[in-house]
Length: 206
Ligand SMILES: CC(C)(COP(=O)(O)OP(=O)(O)OC[C@H]1O[C@@H](n2cnc3c(N)ncnc32)[C@H](O)[C@@H]1OP(=O)(O)O)[C@@H](O)C(=O)NCCC(=O)NCCS
Image 1: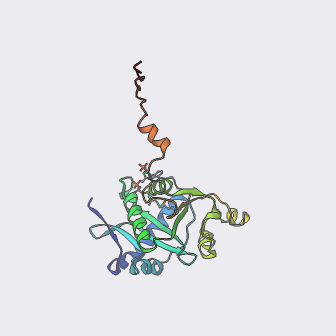
Image 2 (image 1 turned 180 degrees about the vertical axis):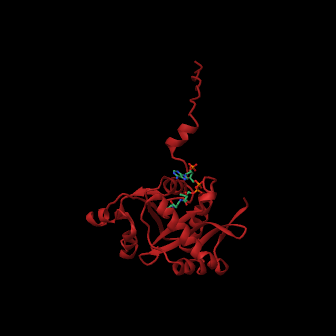
Image 3 (image 1 turned 120 degrees about the horizontal axis):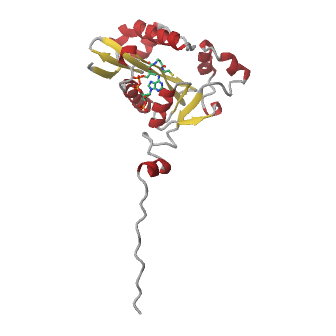
């Protein structure tokens, strides 16, 4: 396996249909609903340099793209997919890092967010500095939430006035966070136990 990850350009638009198929097939296997993406939509993301592709030679094996909401105040990294034969080797992590870096470069003041039920995405985003938040902290752009219509849990979201659902909201706020999360003080203590040095008692000369 010799996989390389690129910011997409027009030469990668030929993979649009294959990417849509990969996303669809994976959703079928997981039994989850997904936001509908057409090959034209994916190609537009690729052509405008708002996507990342992972290629093994000429074979598309990974993908993710950027969406903007609320007049570019919010960015979502969407459509993350890794070819089934290439999973569990750290590839999604690399694609995520690349698309996150691209989002920061293109939209440095935007908040980056995602909603997910997936442990893998929760783990990867947490490492990048995302924090769990209620939906009230995410974009109120109706177009974004329309994307949830393809999800089997949409009735739950609607019933709760778009304020809560089964997904966890994750948010990276550039004003509050560093790019890569530094371990919390608590985590540091777990890794490196604090060894209290014995401080010699001061000997006072009379
Ligand atoms: C989810 C997906 C992108 C992961 O790709 P991958 O290349 O296998 O992931 P990686 O090997 O980079 O693993 C990244 C982290 O997620 C964890 N992870 C990967 N797949 C996981 C799974 N199915 N369940 C739980 N954790 C998982 C890994 O253990 C790793 O965590 P670590 O850093 O603590 O070791 C891939 O399985 C996929 O394309 N699934 C279908 C589409 C999908 O679910 N997309 C996400 C939409 S929200």
